Amino acid sequence: MPRQISGGDEPLSARGRATQPVWDLPVRLVHWLIAGLIAFSWWSVHHHHTAWHIWSGCAVLTLLIFRLLWGFVGSSTARWSSFVRGPASVIAHLRGRWNGIGHTPLGALSVVAIFIALAVQVGLGLIAEDEDGIYTGPLSGLVSINTSDKARDIHELWFNVILGLIVLHIAAILYYRLRGRKLTKPMITGRAVLEPGTPPMRRGKWWAALICLAIGIGITRWVIAGAPPFSHWRPS
Amino acid sequence: MRSKFLAATAACMLVAGCGGYKSGQANSSQGNISKDSRPPATANDAANGGNAMVMLAVPSVSGTQAAAIMKERHDGMEEMGKAFKTLHRDLDSDDPNVGEIRSAAATINKNAKAASNWFPAGTGPEAGKTGAKPEIWQNPQDFAAKLAGLQHYAQQFYQSALTGDVDALKANEDTLGGACKACHDKYRAEMNH
Image (cartoon, rainbow over all chains, first blue to last red; front, side, top):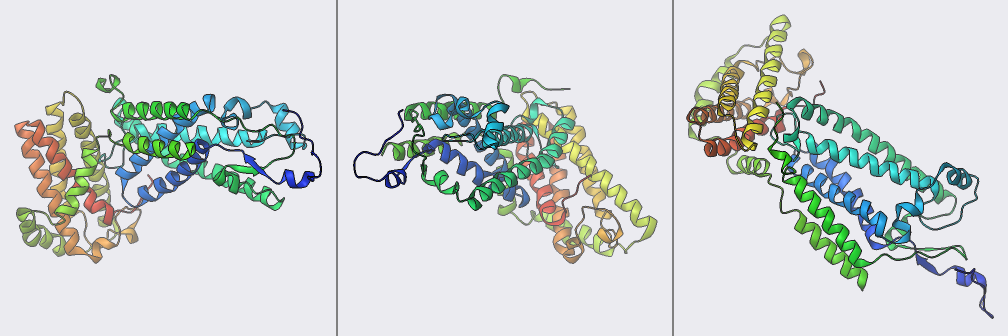
């Protein structure tokens, strides 16, 4: 896309102030739903609502699968290929030589770290069981009692990793805020003021989002059913 | 417009996705607690007669005696937990091992009975590391009733295990788990060990 040049009397600054799409709806929904579900998971497990906690984890699993797939077929700023970059880009970004929309090269590392940390947490939860063996993750039947108990212990500890990443995430947002850039509002409205000449976001197809969601729900339901046919296998 | 449609459809699909998880175990045990927060007549009789009296009558302990009881309590609880996990897996599987369930049921029944002597005054957090909350000794009547509930359901489950009726066992597993949870939610502190 060619750099936009002010035409006629209209000043450049006024044109620059118009907002443009940065984050599509699926990205924003996934972001805020996961944020809410993390809080709910924490609350429910500490208030003896273990069944709700397990449901919450299943919902996170659905969203993670959806987001993984949307990262291949979604809008340009949602795609892994658009924001996961090598160390050279990260260094260029740190030196202030980066211009684009979507995740910065450094922010992308944070996104990937949070995504992996959540996937690990969900995976541990799926095979875990509670201290009394009353509540069991849907895949706990695939592992031994000892493994299941150990998974619960690590699941509990791993939450600290997620908390650490959330703290970093919020600290980065505050840092940008102090430097005059508001990142939260675009994650709500999906729009931001862009530097002139920044290539705009290319939107993904809405039906592609629905297919991704259907796959996410399908896989989650299969997991909830105990991942047949493997569920018939019992460790000795 | 399109984004609203997308959001609505996505929301519907998410809700639809919640249909499959068979957490009958967890749900019904919760339901059970709210439905009969008081154990049935037999358990109540036990609570009013035998066990409550036993527990309240047990003199307070200290020192090595307290430590010995706390150790026995901890080991017994752990043994019950393991037994419950074993029978839960059996009942979740396609071919439950009834022999395994029977021995797990016997373990739980034995420990549930022994638990009458596990909570004398002086075996709370003041005596050492324990998951037993001080609330146990602040609400002795309620605690004794809940313990009697456990003893009742443990006995009931054991009876079903002797007959080997898997459907009855599945139903009784929920009430037994509910009895564990009723007490643990209120009287057990979170413990890392």
